[in-house]
Image 1 (tube, rainbow, N blue to C red):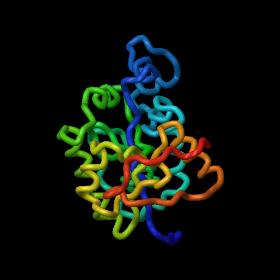
Image 2 (cartoon, one colour):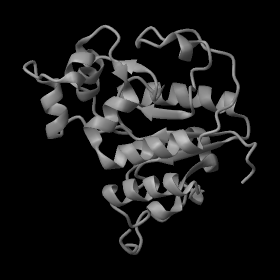
Image 3 (cartoon, rainbow, N blue to C red):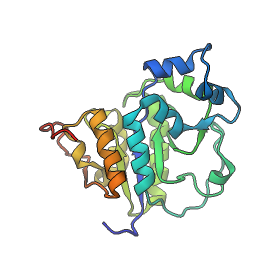
Image 4 (tube, rainbow, N blue to C red):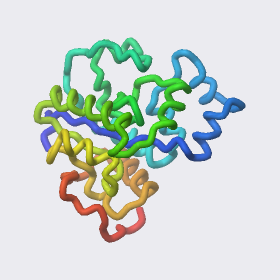
Length: 223
């Protein structure tokens, strides 16, 4: 792969129905995370999902931030539905090249700040290819990304076994949508560990096309 080629990563979202997410969203929740989410500025969505999801999202975020090569593009107007740090708004809506899929606000750079109200809205929206509140913003941002990315690579860090992520993305990107080939046959924890090891080694994984890929395979040896 050419080092000069642009590359962005699309990170599947953290679940918001787990124990940790429910605890943070509780009106009685204490602690630093809940306090920051209740503040006006909130905290970066990448950090929020890394806390809520644990190893898998931690691996996805670390890998994307290590190997992304975002293009130089003209900054987009500030988003009205999210608070964007000034340093991000002055660069590009693609940010560092790690774009987090959300339930109803499309693709957000991992650096974009969200608040508790955003988490509540995410939790209230079903992530499914038939849900327009999910698909419409995702398709909007995917089309914008395709426009500015040129011949760059789009890599999905998420499950390809179900169409809820892949169906709308393949519709926009076609054969350009890639995923780590070693994901096949692994569970979430194993994928997270695989990504963190790649980051530590400084070695990028091999990618395959999402369209037409085998979604099931022989379970690989434990890491």
